[in-house]
Image 1 (cartoon, one colour):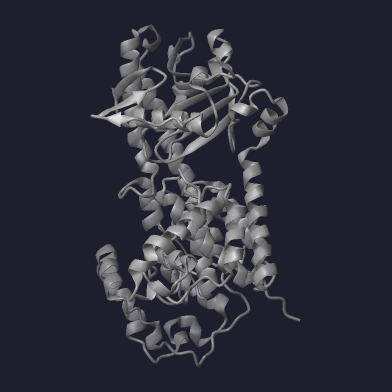
Image 2 (image 1 turned 180 degrees about the vertical axis):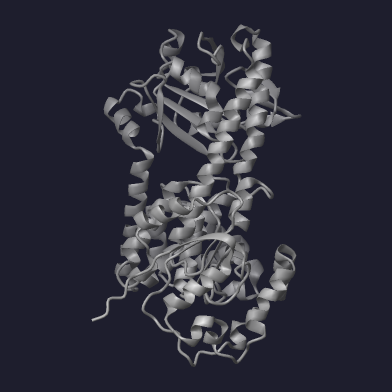
Length: 567
C-alpha cells in the first residue's frame, strides 16, 4: 500500500479523516502530518482513526472535551464506540510545551480510558501511558507508542508501558558506555581521549537533530546516505578548497565546529580521531535517542553519569558529590534574575544545579499563571455555554498558553529562560578538557553554557569580574600552590576585539575596568593581585579572596572548605 501523502494547495490542506479540504492553519498542518506518520510509520488504518472527536462530560472544565486524533485498536471497536486506544493532541507552537497545556486532549484520553496519550507540536512529540489506577488518571512518560501490529499483543503493550523515561536515562547511560568501549577496542584511545571523541559525535548529532526540528534522528543510514550524496554532488564543487581533501566524516565535523563556533567548544585544529568504522558503530548505538530537545533532563542526567564513570578516577577533583551540590544550592536559594558564578567550575556541577534550581522556579510560576488565567478565561459557567463559545474559549486558552510558553524557550531573546541561560550563569576552569566538558554538560542539561570559559579563575574574563555576582557556589582546588614566579603575561590578555565590543555593550564601563586587572599588570606576579598573596600561595586561600571580590555587596557564597590536618 502506498504511503499516505499530505496534500496542500491554495492555502488549504486535505484532511483524509474528514474527506475535506480545511484551511491550512499551523495546528491543522501538525495534525495532518502526524496522521500521515501514524499511517506510514505505525501502520494504522484511516478506518480506525477519527479527527476532532468531541464528547460531553459533566466534569468542570471538561464540558465538551475534544481530541485532535483518536485511534482505536481496530475498525470494529471504532464502530462499536468502544474505549479508545490512543489519543493525540496537536499544537502549533514551535517551543517546548508542557503536558498541562494539552488539557482538553488529556481530559478526553481520561474519559475514554485510552491506554496512551500523545502530545505533538512543530518541534517535539511525547508519549504517555494513561494509568487507570489513578483518579484523575496519571500520566507516565514513555519512550514510544505501539504500532498497529502490536495492538493485540498484551505482553508487548505492557512492555511499552513500562519503558518510562527513567528506563531511557539508564539506557542512554549504558549506550554511552558502550560507545566508549567501541573506541577503546577499535582505536586504543585513553578513557579521556575516547570521551573527547564521543563528545564530538554527540554534538554532530545534536546539530543534525536540531536542524531537523527533532523530526529526524542522526542514524547510521542517514549518515551513509548523506555521505554518498556528498561524494557524488557536493565534493566535486569543492575542488580548489581545503574542504575537498576532507572525508565526509571530517567535513561534517568541520561544519559542526562552525555551528558551535560562538560557544568555543572545539579548537580550530580539532578533528575526528577515530576510524570511520567506529564512528558508524557509535551512530548505530545512539540512533534510538533524539537529542534535539534542548530542555530534556534525561540526556543531561545520563551524560553526567557517564562523565562520572569516565573521569572520577584520574580527574576526581573536578567532581563535587551531588548531595553536597544540592545542599549548598538549596541553602543559598538563588533567585530568578540573580547572577551566579563558579570560578573553578570543573565539570559544571554547581552551575547545572543552580540553573536547574532557578529554571524550576520559573516553570512553577508559569504553571501557576496558566492555571489562574485558564480559570479566569473559562469563567464560572463554562460547562453551560454553547459549543461554539466553548471552542472560542479553548482557542483563547491556547493563545494564552502559547504566549506564556515563549518564556520557557531559551532561544527567544528576552524570554525569562533566555535571560537565565545567557545572562545569569558564569564559570571558568583552568583545565581545557574540564572547561569544554562543563560547557557540554550544561548544553546537555538545557543550556547556560555561554558564560563558561577555559581560563585561570583568578583572572577576569567575559562577565567574570569584581562585584558582579549575587551568588557564588564553588569547590576550589585544594592543597595546590601558585608559583611565586608565575607572571601575568601577554597570553593572559583578551584580544578578541569583536567580543570585547560585545562585552562592553553588555557590561558597560565596568568591563573596561575589569580588563585592567590583566592589561595593567603584564609582567607582574599573579600573587601580587591579591592581598593574601603576600602571605600565602595556597589556591584555596587565594580563591577565597577571589570569590569575596567577585561578590556584590550583600551577595551570598557557598564554598567547600577541606580541613588540613597537621601531624
